[in-house]
Image (tube, rainbow, N blue to C red):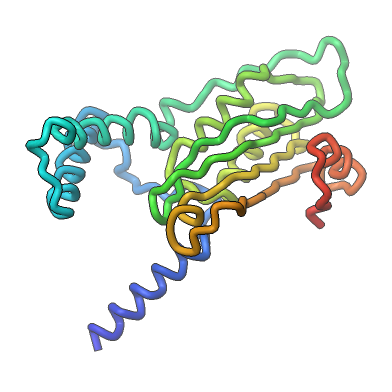
Length: 229
């Protein structure tokens, strides 16, 4: 009975991963996620990576591989997954809209480098973010940094899209924010179905961007045919 249950659970886990199902709009973190320092995390991850490579049969005494566990651990903590740590969240400074610009502002083609949380393989694409000011504006580079921050963690694209919109809404104090992300998932491109041509498009619309006319105007900026209805 236990073996059957375990097999069914393994199959369910694999199904979730293949279908890119997210279980929450928030990144699933344990309560003790930051009880140890980054340096301690690097040391623990280094040991784990070493164990993985040795299990695969790699000779870690080779000059090329000796530093790999440490390099991977540092990349995980300081770069690829730095967005897990709230201390790295960018300060989204806003300013008064003194020039009374009332149309939508669109920041196109923000580079997205993220990591699929199901197979820990790269997600690479572009984000397009827009908002309509209600008295406040945000620095253009801050929009890029918000995308980067939420990208640098194990992710599903749907959640990433929602988190970018929610962060912008919080910073600006308005609901009128939209985000579209078009990205390639290497878990699809390099394994499984191995489809190197397809990409995934997700969208999140808030406030006025839920209205058909405003949504269409935004998508026209992006030259996208879909209405996301």
